Length: 279
Image (cartoon, rainbow, N blue to C red; front, side, top):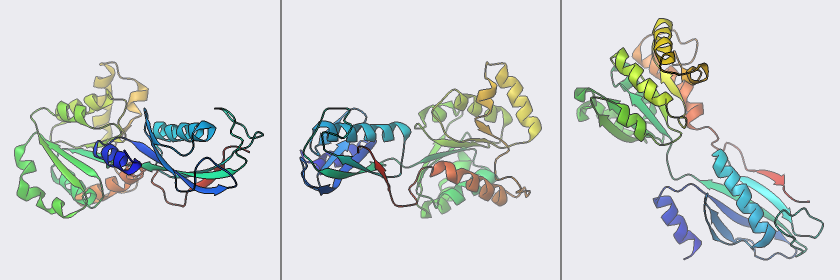
């Protein structure tokens, strides 16, 4: 199977991967420029030449996967006896430049718990972004198709969840997902927050409410064994500091602005950097 056929299968299966390309060759090397390989956490497909070169590239790619890096990287590797080689010497005498590009097959996920005035306004703002937007509410009327129709015009992939108890939605969130909690019921807010804090793999956790509400929640959560480190994971009140308006639209815009650096953290904004791997 050729590398692009593997790529199609891996992307369809939403397997995180890094594409490694030999972009330049000076002198002698085991492969020509343009050679590619795909690297996942547990496998590699294709080849850029074997030996120390390939093993080094695989190691760098898996480090990127572990760090969830999104920006591409370029590395220069020399194939000489004098060059450091962790995986065996390659003395072809040349020098190669490899480009490592993360392939993101899963959109960032944001879950909004509670589609009241603020929740719906926030969903409208976020719906223009290329994300997976999960909308959860225990009240069926809040998720009525006609009410959510304006959200369908944006880039977001909309998923709705109506459930009397929302813990299952929290449990089903993909790793790295972000969530904002603003249901109509403080008891429901607390329950969703408690389930979210039991997951160590979630991103931004926002909770709407006052300082007194948060103080009561902290007291109840502490009684369940949660620590100060757990509480520091919670952003409350939500929204950029300084946004004083209590209008739903203002809260939504301020919260979306606060969320964006988390949603698109690591998205490349500049050309890939160069780093010497072996001299």
